[in-house]
Length: 95
Image (cartoon, rainbow, N blue to C red; front, side):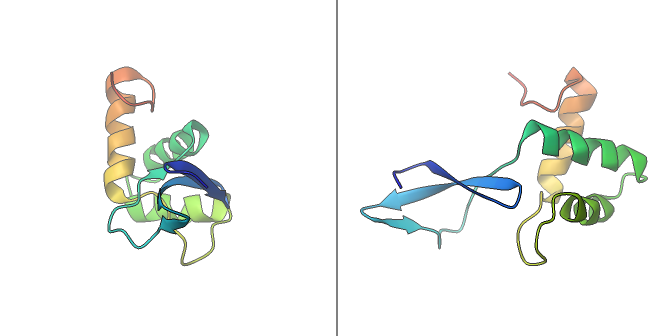
């Protein structure tokens, strides 16, 4: 594994910083990289479930079969995707 390489599992991927031969997974900030399909699903669920972040996270976990202690999109990410969708019609990052 080289620096900035993606690590994948259960419908998610993340970038892990590597120093020498060992990945630094104990760092305070790990940026999760969610697919456009997953972002779109979260936005659709947000609108269909009365704008509830908690419900979006629960449905997301079920849909993508994410184990109980693994990460799901956080409040900030979901609201950013919704804002991007409202402004651009897409969940992609604004340019």
